[in-house]
Length: 241
Length: 317
Image (cartoon, rainbow over all chains, first blue to last red; front, side, top):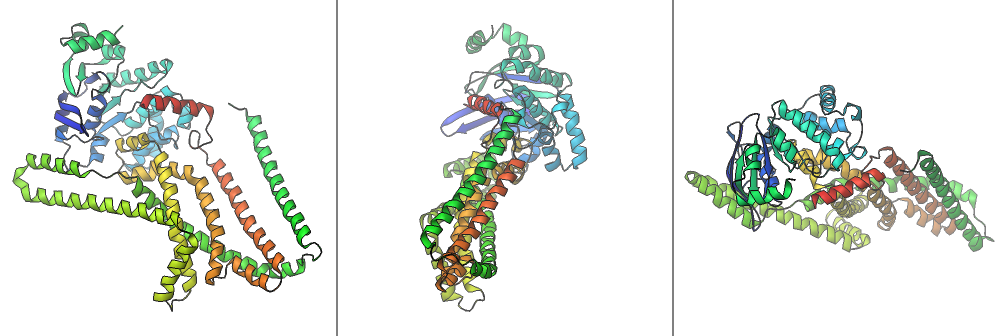
């Protein structure tokens, strides 16, 4: 479904990704963990080409996408993204946030888009908040709208960039619940997160990233219980309680 | 969260405040006039007879101002947008070229062509951006009067016989002037919109232009309405300079009538007309702003939004 092949990325003198290869099958939920600065967010952004890799190839559904022949806008319609700081469009209501992509990218007519938007908001439990502006919503609600907004484009896969780390503790649960439901429905997901409960319960695979390289990967039980790498072990001993 | 009644009371207070302020201003002006020319007396009958031509002058003033402001809006947006774009450093182009040419060495000549084009394109963008920087600096750094003179001289020398020559010269000069100022306003406004907004729009599959059109611009326009209003008012007042070039706008008539012996009447009437327009405009814009206000956008934030933005900055830091 998604394949990244030996990708490298530099930001100036900083070598952020140093040859990462990952294969993600349809319906798989991959949780990427690692210390800050290890390149997790950059890796995600390379998949939907918000960041263009310097070297290496990205495939979506077998199509080599980081070539000049393919419009990055097309790639981004295939892969939805949810951000750490939600990034809801401030000037639009919840339902307008969800329908913007439908109307302006897919060309869906307004009424159909609105109907679909309300369905999606209902799906994330926010039917009642359709006409609220982002500033009138709690962090958890905003993040759920952001998930609905990404889903509106009918993506083949979803990227989550630390979706709960900007949230107050009381709102984390509701966002993780929506993500869990999504995973159960068979959505292909790459999640950068340190929510180990979520990783244990939902992930089909954990990928441990450090200094731009994959140090370890495997099923959660295995990686958590018997980390092979010294750095992985040190990292988990710090975050697992 | 201030209660609704508090806010209503506050709004009423503002209204009363502004009416009081206006009354005070007119009071001061009236008493000053009385002190200055009390024994001469204002010839109100005369004022009534000239109000017609003064209104005609006002109409032209508004026309010049609005036309140059509207044209300047387009220029300002483009200048502001160009000045906020980043250019790719030359070193990166070179590296990308090495990477791609290593990838497909068989298409060497087309690769070189592509590379050449991208260098030309980047160079062009750089040059255009620098020109925009210079344009804004020149417009800000020289007097509008001198700018009008400059443009007018060009018209005088090269377009001597053009109909409405003086009017067009003034209009053009004011357009490029306000274009520069509005470019600076737009740049500030565009930069205030959080970069995450563009990223989210791009992640949905919106093109660069559509992200600008549907996400950044609507927010920017709401943010820059107050400085744009200021610019319009400033421009209207600056349009008084046009009288010097023979354009028959409000100040032109004021000067003409003043020289016919009714100095105070002419200037009081003129000032009043300018004031009525600027004051009404400011009030109308404030009303529109209030009508289209969106929670969390701009300076009038609800406390809940303030808390959120703090959290956001903490999260992105």
